[in-house]
Amino acid sequence: MALSKQEDYFKDWKAREEIAEAMIPLIGNLYRNHGVVTTVYGRSLVNNSPIDILKTHRFARQILETELWVRDTFPILQAMCNLDLAPAKIDIGKLTVRFMAQGQGLSAEEFVRQELSGINTGKGSLLSEPRDVVLYGFGRIGRLLARILIEQTGGGDKLRLRAAVVRKGSDDDLVKRASLLRRDSVHGPYHGTIRVDEEENAIIANGNMIRIIYSDSPESVDYTQYGINNAILVDNTGKWRDRDGLGRHLKAKGIAKVVLTAPGKGDIPNIVYGVNNELINDQEQIFSAASCTTNAIVPVLKAVHDRFGILNGHVETCHSYTNDQNLIDNYHNKSRRGRGAPLNMVITETGAAKAVAKALPELTGKLTGNAIRVPTPNVSLAILNLTLGRETSVKEINSYLRDISLDSPLQYQIDYTNSPEVVSSDFVGSRHAGVVDSLATIVSGSHCVLYVWYDNEFGYSCQVVRMLDRMAGLELPTLPR
Image (cartoon, rainbow, N blue to C red):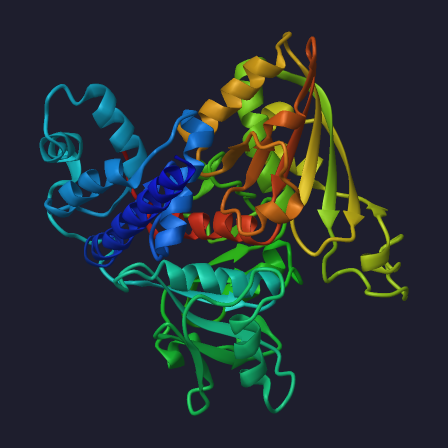
């Protein structure tokens, strides 16, 4: 009996693995030829291995409280491939669950044709031509932005990363920068191929030529000589944060818009994608993507405030150390940050609580904040200590945030976990702005404490790319609605 059960488990696994393998060319064809991103409960299946596809289906049980099998989603995917779809994000997990609940005798093909009739309008492109992107700075965030932008190149009709601007470090600068893109101690190896073209001083990543341009001043670069025009420039240096400083980029030929990957000063719009997207308009040329912490907490704060109201609160973030700190004790112009980052917890300030007001004006003056830099290289934890406008319970607030993470305008910003074993390293590579740790939630009457994990590097970079997509007019409709 035990042997029979063992064989049954193994046969079932091999059968599901075979189906996952058969899904890969269908997912790839939809993506490259139609601009369709296939997902399962918000998690993309594009460029996934068979094991990744199976793991993504397995993840769905945290949401559905039952299993989602590839043998159920595969017919839905096949039916999609028989349509002539326009660009979109299509969640085959949600489509499958809806089909099983509401199919009412329809075949999978009939149901899918009905559900996707609004985009069964033929191949198309959201842009008349690709939109150029330039990275000013090629450090932690710059290289992760490069990885994501290249991954999302698709058929080449979307955002195209054309160049990275840096200060030359040595004679073998190009090779070293290619190596840093290829290998990452936190995020692992690059998924693809990388080589260098020394004649063009460029890195070739999955066929994308990224010119490495050396410059010490924004206005001195003529991007048009490299065929770069109407580009969105992403400033990852943080050297300039006001309109005058960032405006120097606009004096360079070929640059049309500037995005700062740090909190902006003055009247620069600070965008938390998913919350205040309406501030992105054609008239404004300079934007800030705020900070990683602001992006992590604002969507959760908005969701909570919309349902329960927030009277006041305190935000404490346990933040991984950054390049701004010293490896060992040395001089630093800010208090405490001169002490060795891998050896100490370091109390420091954060502007995230005040920055919340720029995205959610209704919370102006209601929050305080502080930060503790901790000896981990990536993934941080925000603790939201809130007084609400009414009493609630752990079950009510968790159920609400779970629903928000599944099916709402904030589903790509807020993720949710109910695992009793997760720790910070489990969230490396999270594409969400923040992940609510439901088992850590505390509620007493109208007072609650929420714990929100966030990959302060990769999750934040995904938010920046979502912002770039909107600026370029590349927001895909999400189905099913």
